Length: 402
Image (cartoon, rainbow, N blue to C red; front, side, top):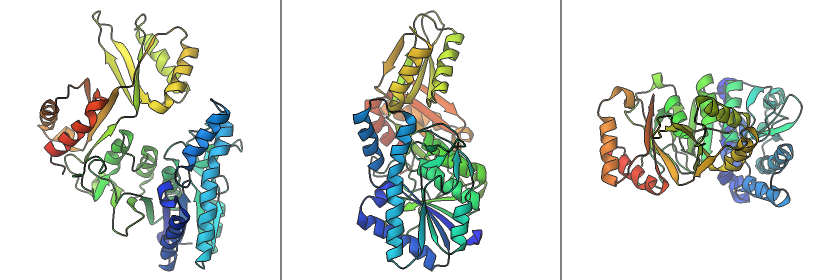
């Protein structure tokens, strides 16, 4: 096996949703093999299989044990990998499929949200040296305690990048149902344009702030290990978006705008607003591995400040349960009418006038920001969820991204 001729590819659920699509992926994969390359393919579950399995679990238990949930959810990727291996064999090529544990994806012990700790892909390497195409189930691994784990949403992206880093692969391709990374969600903003090249830092911020094309954890792995990631369409052969180091490209002032409408804000306690209470609340959320996407301190007439956090809506029940246990009696306000709109680009810090343009654009749209925070290359605006789409469209136009 020659790492300079190795390509690691990832295909998502929409690219594998039907038998015909599986056969189409097999043709793409074998095309790389015909070109003389070694190939590792990382697959997600077909279509909406993971969501369907999760809902199936909920019909049995409103709060299923996480270990058993991992055992159930990993079945989706096993179906995909086996079918794709069969389709490749039908085309006259040798292929073999591996689960996350068989392929040496070692994680920590956190069920449903594990992090990759190491990649011991000895079996993958052996099969590549035999000339086989290796198919790996994404989204899953094995803990040091020999327990099956899953990596959480976007886990297949992370599996792909981690394997590319472990093998020092020449190419790391993430195939999706869009042509690449856009200046805004093209389904919502038709004028959005594809970004040919984007820095790790900008892609990381876009992903964390709501862009769904790449999971932010996979971008973080790519940045740390210097893996160039090519985000491209599984339907067309054209070049998509290359995610790479900032020093390799000339970046724009603003690279893109994204929104996150899947958040809920928790506001803590009218009675105790001390820093100690805030620290206890954050410690409880950290213990339950709740992702705090934004923190705000809301002033009150006494000047003490009231802590609020914005977390993913899907983690609401889990967050409220741990807070009820760790901070019994604490009053918690819940607001699910808010959203964030984020503007990302290296020019936010270096170019004067952008903040003024943003405020003018929001005013023209009739949006009253509830808060605006800036951090490095990101400006995040909290607003009513009903205002987010109009704000994104207006900002995208006024900042010249179309």
